[in-house]
Length: 404
Length: 52
Image (cartoon, each protein chain N blue to C red):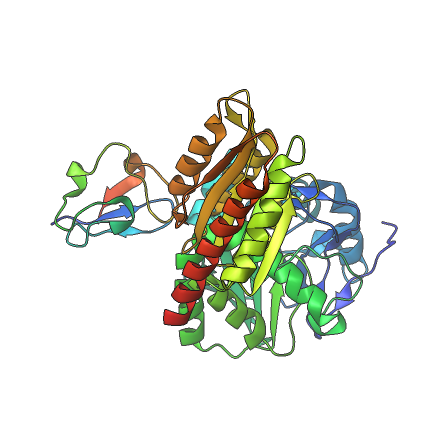
């Protein structure tokens, strides 16, 4: 097989054999402005082992990288840490190409793989604590259900002290640099936060438990090797601590105001609300017009916020579609401990405001100021009410954060 | 009282604790949970639970 891309040696026995997706900009609702990688790892021990595969179109890149080290047909064992198709897209073909005798997944993974690929009984279920000796190294499995799918698990490789963390501590970031310490820290931090906000946020209680369990296991760790983005080989406490902190969902004095507008009226209200927030005690306000902001970036901004305020015009008695899109997405991410409010301009029915209020209530965003609804173009008095709304929320936020 | 486990994610419903996230009082048996009650961790419906 002609090899265009080579494997990247991580240790004497372990190689990165994944694929880099430079061009992906949309990943099930998440804007991936920096592309991503699908990481797969080859363990060259007596039992030659492949940890995860890649998204289907990248199969040849992965097989080529493997071939630069060893004949893929020599792979004995495949471990599937997660059934989602960015990691299993070519699993059936790779099973054929390698003739791997065993394919291991969690119990839920076995069920999920059967429901994705209608595979036969070749997948073997493993559970937390189960081990497989590969030779000098030994693989131990740790289920991490609902981080972020029921089938998710991690694999720890003793002998190399590598935790294959699957989507854990991952991020969407395409690079030829394979290690986090080789990349600008602020970019890595941003993408780690964005990934947590968009993928893990609803499961924060489980993240807290998983991090506690990981710390208690006290595994010797030389590397954390996720399935997306760079590998950690230095300062391993950093991504773990970041996840633990985000999982607490503590409110901060940062407020997010998101809105859309038909004739700039709701927009001018939003600007007044933002000013009010600053006057009331918010230390930072993100004003995010939905015409210019992607829902996944709004999600990233609420990760470390304390308040969410939403503005919508009324169109045909409904919340404006872009606002509904964003709120649908945010409701699913289930961020807790936010205060907020609703506002908007309207022509005659003004029914969007009531819908926004019900929506924020359903999202457990505590409304701490009465909504402001203004007809057509706001006058000075109207804008003053918007500023007052912002100030009220800002004051409550400042008090809450100080007393916590 | 009988505890139930979510077969999707492993969450255990303990009747003695109830489920404050969905306004379920402590002491509520699993059978008495409303039909629309879902797993607080992963959203799975009641029929995905088994007694443990």
